[in-house]
Amino acid sequence: MADPQSLTAFIAGLPKAELHVHHVGSASPRTVAALAARHPDSRVPSDPEAIAEYFTFTDFAHFIDVYLSVVDLIRTPEDIRLLTFEIARDMARQNIRYAELTVTPFSSTSRGIPEQGFMEAIEDARRSAERELGVVLRWCFDIPGEAGLEAAEETTRLALDLRPEGLVSFGLGGPEIGVPRPQFKPYFDRAVAAGLRSVPHAGETTGPETIWDALRELGAERVGHGTSAVQDPALLAHLAEHRIPLEVCPTSNIATRAVTDLDAHPVKAMVAAGVLVTINSDDPPMFGTDLNQEYAIAARLLDLDERGLASLAKNAVEASFLDQAGKRAISEEIDAYTGKWLAR
Image (cartoon, rainbow, N blue to C red; front, side):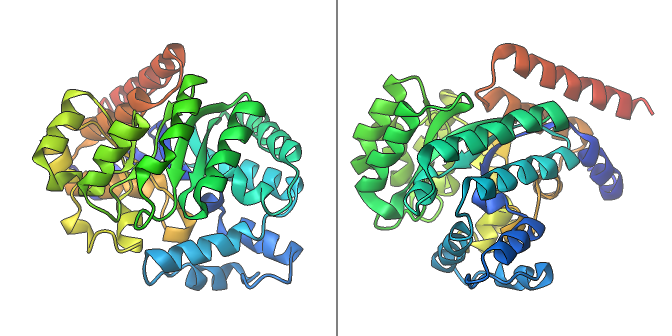
């Protein structure tokens, strides 16, 4: 592997795409503090330094509890707009050119934010981010699984009836234990029939059968996390043969205790099996990471040099739902940047 310091510098300038990153979960301590100051009745601290301690999780259930407390800070379309544009600003700093941001509209509309105001806020931020920052955002509307079928029905209605221009896919997040995937099949069927792409979370805190359910029942074209896929050789072979990408989020898996430590992370076995792996940050400020750091972790775990990292970046472009011209442009930019770096 190349010198780690040199790789860190290479990663910082590498054009990237990100496919598994959550809207609320991307709120930086700076943004969370600003929102907490706007809404002082919240239990979330308004001191950015105290927020780091607040974002220390004991298990996945605790993470969900803290996550929902941050959701409670987002109460107006103006809050939504601030959050969304500041996420794009943080992405621009990392040379992220394109991101599919997982948005959970039910969490906001069920708390009283007008649905039309919500859509206008994310779209205004999306257009401004592309114009002012050069970051292209697209949306994945996801069902918060813990909220049940009412949330599934409402998320589907919001996605299909109010469909914002940036919406490309339909997902399912939240806890997996006690939230079986097959019950969401009718909602995914409707979303896919309307032209949205299926990208549910599966196999993060449960076994490979949850991933099979996501594939067979929900028509998954990509799988969020898929950590337990390595427990089933037939599943790995199926993912590899059909080029179904996994959205791997190393630090997230440690933070939520889905994986015991980074050296035990199954990403190496996924790659060895020929699975198309993309690297993502999930809920970066909550996990004390960003996409650049996740690429550095992947470089160590997979023993990658600059060319290997460039290939990893191109995996995300290939697995994205960007149009072919957009994919080609980012891939060519990755190649040009890598060639220039190696020629130094």
